[in-house]
Amino acid sequence: MAEVLIKVEHLHKKFKNQEVLHDISVEIHKGDVISIIGPSGSGKSTFLRCLNALESPTKGDVFFEGQSVLRSKNVDVLRQKMGMVFQQFNLFPHMSILDNLTLGPRKLLKKSKEEAEEKAMALLKRVGLEDKAGQFPLQLSGGQQQRVAIVRALAMEPDVMLFDEPTSALDPEMVGEVLQVMRDLAEEKMTMVVVTHEMGFAREVSNRVLFLEDGYFITEAAPEDFFYHCENERVQSFLSKVL
Image (cartoon, rainbow, N blue to C red):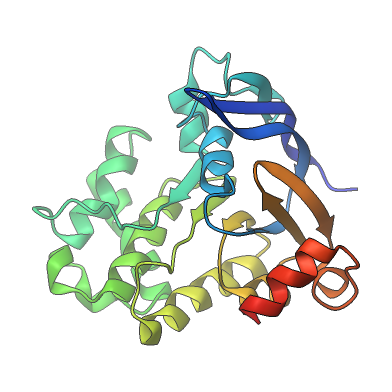
């Protein structure tokens, strides 16, 4: 059994009078590619944001590499090991692509300018964007910006990557180029937790699929079982509408 990288214990999250996550417990192992799917408003993004304490759970705890994320006095240090990619690209528009990629490694990892730039250029080459290093985010397409956002997270040398619907803001023709980068990461055994509506990715790339509805994990299964043999009526109804 692979090492447990993230352990979620009895997680609850309430906003005002609405409880959006109910007693969630799950383990994420090193090398897992987990797709979290379910209808809109089911709590998927909230769950993901609780993993690195961007949201504070009402009850429960999250352990990352054996340390409590919620009680840590150095949560920023833990977050550096948990790369996060959002729906929106969140790049600094006034900075070049290269500067976007080197800011974190230089400030937080204390890398030299030369070392940070060498790493950034290698990552840009890996996603086919080395010729965009001197450009600014708004000069790039949405798909290119999201690839840069993924590279920016990778530049921090994370142990796990969290993706919050990374293709939902993209035009359909740009989705494939982002998913290909994620497929490549999966082949390299990067641990990934992906909130997604891309059923093809969940079916072909994940090793586990979690279905979340109304703040409950209704079922968890390998993709083959989830997509082709799941007997849960709610899951069957959902899949009949999205496949």
